[in-house]
Length: 338
Ligand SMILES: [Zn+2]
Image 1 (tube, protein in one colour):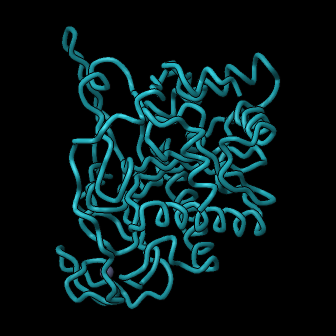
Image 2: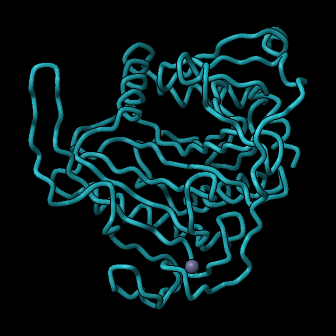
């Protein structure tokens, strides 16, 4: 790798979104006087009578959670998207809006209140992957639903108030902006080069072996060259698949294994229950054939240099572009060593 990338301010191109990030490696030595967060100690109790996600507890709408043993999925009655929304269009001069129909669901990963993904058994994480597959199938086949977003917010500083291991799935009529960008980039690349964008990218990353954190037979986990968040990472299947439904049994196991490995490394990094937002980007479910799509899971963690120091996206980043100090390479080196 060019030594210029280690010393000089530069911008890096995100091949999936077409956006740039400013990297300032010379700044990593400046003293820190910024905000510190209170360290998040994990709750050790396996059942919390006050938790609305624990088995047998009553939720705010009066529904009682079953005594579930693996994963449990329910519709979020206070979701951002609602099923009975009309698909209206509003156009008035320069003002333009559209009705957005959708479904929001909550997925409990485990009945055990005290666990998080890194603590879970691989076999139980395979059940989580299969639950994601079931939701993708069911929601993707629903009329007027054209995209399914699976994601997790972990930790209070990511806006998640309940420590019970859970994620969400939002499914909607329109194709979200980030997904549209990634569709266009992968489509353009396939048309021009005749090969898959992420397939060629992971091939280069595996050859260079500077940003790869771990891998197994079916998956590679790496810090993308264009990472914005300090320890941003991606889990990418080595085989090109438009969505998670294409996973074989072996690949499900390998995916679960990488999921556990990455999140364990995250927890070990600052000796804390590491907060992040993670999400799976995959092809839309509008019935079209997306042969360019290569699904992947991304992790955007806010912590910068300890359990209590987080990165903010303010000032220059709000007005100009994303910026980072530690390089993707040094972040990868650190995570790889854990
Ligand atoms: Zn709970």
